[in-house]
Length: 508
Image (cartoon, rainbow, N blue to C red):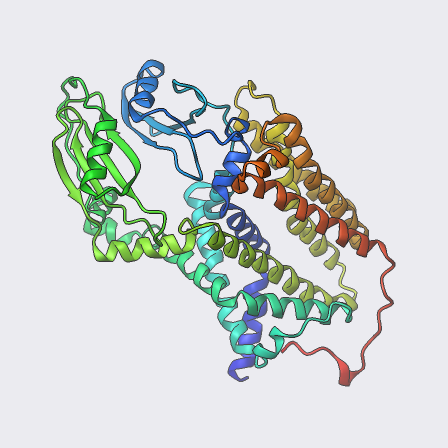
């Protein structure tokens, strides 16, 4: 057995086993490229394009009025072009429980907006499947499988450049799916290779923590603190004096950074005399924000530490920034979106090739594979659309509203899986009905948005708010594509022709 033959088996099974999981990871990561735009769409209070006039001191005053427990820390982020509102988070001392709110920019004083999962839901689904450290390890293992499948796929494809220009959608099922798999694999190969590698690399300290655990006697936070160069001051267990103005410290930080923008502002041990304020630099034009931080005494405003990221840490931040696509403008994120969709299409095509090669053998287990395909490949997008419907239909005053949105997503996905199992012997009809449902859900969302919010599509386009309008436009495009595909699948399938030995489809 030569290298290419051995790589063929590795490519088949290395890609097949995690294919459904990789689809979830890639799809969620693709949507998360526009997480901040989705955050705005899912909060009708932000549809008018109003930029908040509140300050950091106003946000801190709200926290002091509404949270009576002793805090370990709190942190906030000011308005940006993509997120024109203040965000606040805090941790009650001794609980390790985090709370987060976002403030309505239309008022003179901070008032929380109704909670929602927002685009952050897809970001967390992408990197840990909402399963904490266990989910993060599963995602990392899937990323390693993807690297194996990509490298082995490159080795077995001798005609990789020819495959780039070959797509025969009207050929027999296996040939058409193989062409699609090759085309989308070749188009997105550099992108998928880089994203798979960086996705694994940026969590390497979590995947392999033994060295840090041994070197720092189990104190991993000390390790990260030394890597980042962060400043820490022990608590004095004495009451804190009147705090210095956060807005003044932000202005001072801008001056020291020659006018650079400020990102996260955090206050540690705010109720203790040892309280410090960290002001972090933000630079959205660079791959990987530099994470430079100025640390002040929270009472006197004295500059205690100036953290400039080391060369090694900057390299790590560059890899993380390259993976997360939160740099430059919308054009870069659009490229990531298109390449992510290519990755999803590559996985669908590859699994369909695997099925087409085996469907003539009479294997009864294939109907369950098709049911799983329908549950994941169609079920996840449909459940995501259902989540957006839930965001609009659940009342703003509903208690635990974000949790309710999550249950809408989970419930819709379970229903899609049950539907796929019941219709597992009618795969073509099931796909046609799923496409029709997707068209109804996607095309109905812009109409529902217009009825439940002031920022409907025409209003967004009239004021040139393309960031908000892009969500509705994408939903309309997705709905029309689903409708066109459903129309194609409504036609009777062409009669299959059994190819002769000389005309059988080759895998490469």
